[in-house]
Amino acid sequence: MRQYANVITAYAIMIGLIILVGIFQSWSIALSILNFCLISAVMTMGANIQWGYAGLINFGIMGYTALGGLAAVLVSVPPVREAWQVGGLNIILCVGIIALIAFGVRYVLKNFIKSNKRTIGVGLIIVFGLIILRLVSETAIESIEAVNPAKTGFLGGLGLPIIFSWIVGAFFAGALAYIIGKVALGLRADYLAIATLLISEIVIAVIKHEDWLTRGVKNVIGLNRPVPYEIDLQSAEWFIILVAKWNSGTLNLISDITEKKVLLSQLVIDASSVYVKLCYTGLFTIVVISLLIITQKALYSPWGRMMRAIRDNEEAANAMGKNVIKQHLLIFILGSAIVGIAGAMMVTHDGLFTPGSYRPMRYTFLIWVMVIVGGSGNNFGAILGGFAVWFLWIEAAPIALFFINLFTSGLPETHSLKLHLLNSVPYFRYLMMGLGLLLIMRYRPKGIIPEKIKHI
Image 1 (cartoon, rainbow, N blue to C red):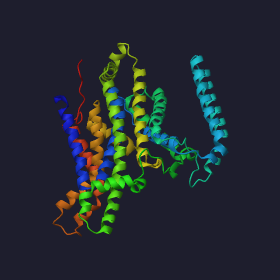
Image 2 (cartoon, helix red, strand yellow):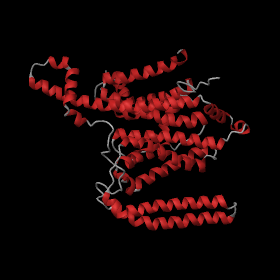
Image 3 (tube, helix red, strand yellow):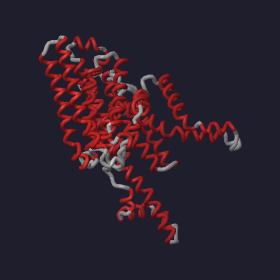
Image 4 (cartoon, rainbow, N blue to C red):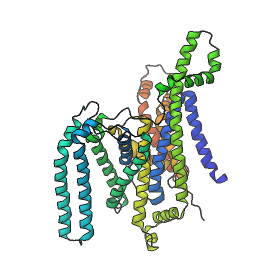
């Protein structure tokens, strides 16, 4: 128990801060922060598996997150029958053409020795395949995007419960990671970082501009939810009775029937928001705990020790007969798949898919800050980093506003310094993030909860 004392203390402080937000701001805000902390924790576990276990730099987290969000759309949105009628068959044909191109390239690479003829053959297969693909898809895409573009303009999805998209998002992200890993994992660390970042930008560009698949920048709204809707709860008799019993002390103080009904109505509205967020908290907590158990078992298994040995000295591990390339590819796929789960969870929570919102600052570099601050190579540290950095990212403005009002309380409201500081509140987020990262790097260079190696 003593060895986990610092972990328990750090998490207790974090939970205490979230409770303070509930007390001084609102419980709805506190639960929203907690839910996004849990989603961020899933992302940091994915990044930590790649960097903390194997030393792989992946700056493409944004792309895998977006693929998880795309999975939520393709799984949960009902199919648009009119769009399928005018172009669905051609789209299926295009998928077949892409598969034939892939199999053709693989066949040539596998059955012919390396030569100029083989290179020319692969090039011809790709070029002619893309030409045919363009001819088949162009008319179909135009027809699909013309079907009621204000509301649909895309093929839709499968109409299944959105929670299945969490698994599909993992498969999408893992498949992309396999392709990227086959091409880019042989690169030096800095080149790998650049390559993964650029590929993630390509993924975002495709999602934003292929309206037939995702509606592009028109966004997809009104996605199904795995939890009740607030409006349904507000009209449910059992929920109203529950809220009335929970707040019976406050309601009994009011004698006027009309005022009591108005207060009860407002309490039901507030409670419905809290109840829905609690449901999300329960679902996300199950995912985080499940992944934590799995990753902890993996970390201290023979496989985990092998990965750390590869991370620390690739040459020595290779000399011992370990297939470094194969293990790097495997862990690259696993980490990316976990990030894909987080992307689907985020879209599930928001109820909408907005391709234009995926930016490197939020979905790549902030996640890396979380891993570094929490402690790379330590799953508890990575999760704590997700909590701490996201909390500071959200609460930086309220904290800055509090201190500005405190230190300028003696100045008049129209004072130039006070006005300047109040107008600069949104930028304190970046200032506080930078200062926090500098302090961590100076006094805790291995993170708040650094990696611990168990000698077995």
